[in-house]
Length: 135
Image 1 (cartoon, rainbow, N blue to C red):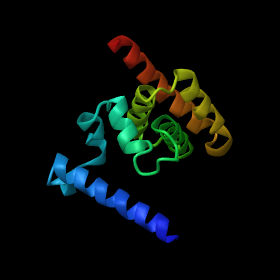
Image 2 (tube, rainbow, N blue to C red):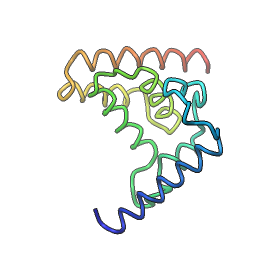
Image 3 (cartoon, rainbow, N blue to C red):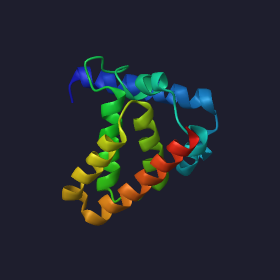
């Protein structure tokens, strides 16, 4: 690991820990499935700050990072439905289209298998339906 990357990683970890303390000093008792309740959907600006180019100005934007996350969650078999739902909502907020999200999920069928793709598409469709009914 290069010194530059170590500094970047340390900065990211320190920022993450500080944000966690600001939200709730007792986050050691926080359960992962509660994330959906804490942040149903972050604003586009907040997404760009947390997942975009804040830590790496020449790096990926929030939209791209969230699409990559959808891909990873799909390959994992879409086991974490709350995480998948949250990431899809955030990807939409960051500017990804429904078609792009579906295409990323479809592409992952080659790596995670058709059952994983099917489950991820089912979750995505639920999120798409919810976002349409809330619009």
